[in-house]
Length: 84
Image (cartoon, rainbow, N blue to C red; front, side, top):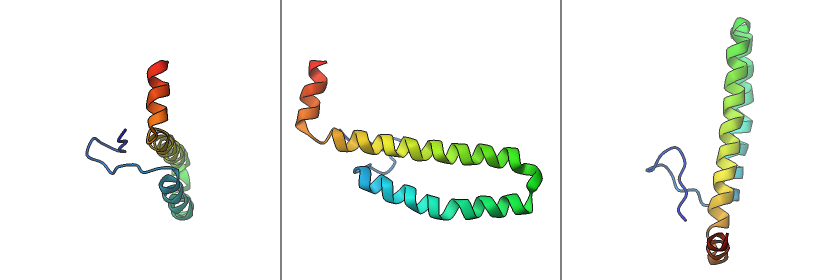
């Protein structure tokens, strides 16, 4: 099964390692951006909180897509899914 993220023409998800690397890159970059935003605009804390929650939700979605992509590569998965 071909799994894509963001849209039908988005990048193909290869597997868990690809997602892990992408998530790790985001986790190295975004906290510094969030901290800078909070320092510059402390009154926007509620908006920042929502942005942080959305970012983690997106990372969770990426990992789930990666798990599905990796699991469905196997013919055994397809056969098991047809039985259910």
